[in-house]
Length: 298
Image 1: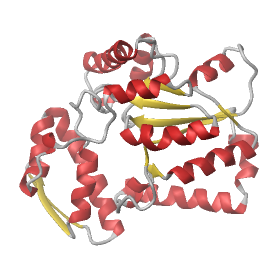
Image 2 (image 1 turned 90 degrees about the vertical axis):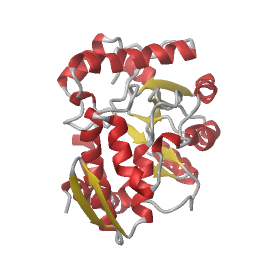
Image 3 (image 1 turned 90 degrees about the horizontal axis):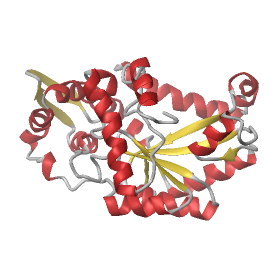
Image 4 (image 1 turned 180 degrees about the vertical axis):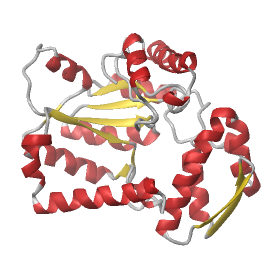
């Protein structure tokens, strides 16, 4: 089994066990820290359609989101934005245990389904926008890949000259197909973005470049930004693993995404989320570049 699949199956099960038994409280004095940053992607109504299991974990319902906010507050945690975190760490406001809600990429449902929940609960949240989404140059290929896997009980394709086959009739098979192809496609797109997408989707009659997308428009990003509860941060331009890029290209992702967002919003953009963000996808070089680019948090 793909190790990434195994990790994604074990971690949620362990979290459910610790929460149900209350054992997480024993670790709080050691691992609780000052607070935590929660990372979400999409907010969709219940029954929005089938998903690959661990991809489904990137989605929550509005009801779940509302209940999580209530739970956080019952634990005595304060929900803050990243500007408050900076002020707290600088000693400008008193320290207290906190939670920051963040959403990566910039999906339309963050406006449609998440914002009403945070308005009702009077709580702040942060959306890290990959500027290619509102500019309609970023293809949500991961969503297309998931749809393709769900539509095929057995998936056969060629990628990078290799013939690949996956049994997609079970959850475990769909997980393996998604994460194996995700890794291979990311590697291929570093060299040939359009060619890799055409190679994967073309044989199935899918034109990824005609896909309407799921991302916010610039008008919708501005709608979000007008709400005082919302912080808009950068998520790069093309949603690529920064550590895989040449240094000059990596720096451009950081600086150009910030410039575009500030130009569109008419306000400073001080916060960054590294695309993907695993240890092999962002490291000391990227941390130093983000600081040099003027981000206060990343």
